[in-house]
Image (cartoon, rainbow, N blue to C red; front, side, top):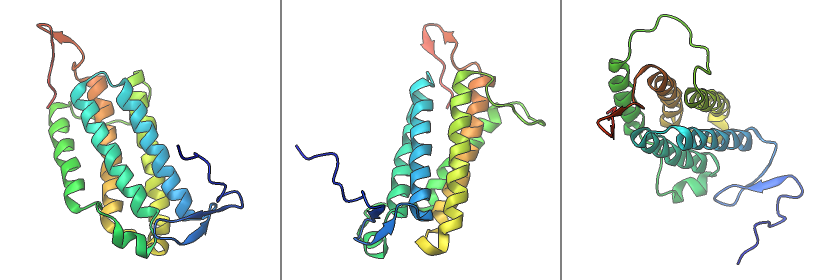
Length: 185
């Protein structure tokens, strides 16, 4: 069994995928660290969502965030070795889902205060962390050669989490209908 600790970061440096070393305090490390935090909060929301369809969608978002984290944590050499990257269709998929869910919701003309339910509160925390990660990614775009597709995906992901928070609070998807859970898709 390999050890979980390597001691290579004890002096404040970390190695990017591809071999370059950077300070752990760098904006790039901060950005992919915040993506990791967002991923963790989406996992928390998924584990409490209480709906298999929504959980599956959130788990897909988590996989996309792992891809984004890898892109951010890669230098030029590492980027060339990546087998998956975020592409325009990833954001387009979120847009289609947002449109489907938004069509089922009543129009909203006011700001929502997070916390109407625990389920939506988890989604709002995840949304806020995704927004924070998005801001950091935009801040390092030139330094880390971040693709526009990553920025667009992060923006759509926060919108998607917002819509899901409304779905869990405003649609009756958790009520039992004839012994079966109502499908929301």
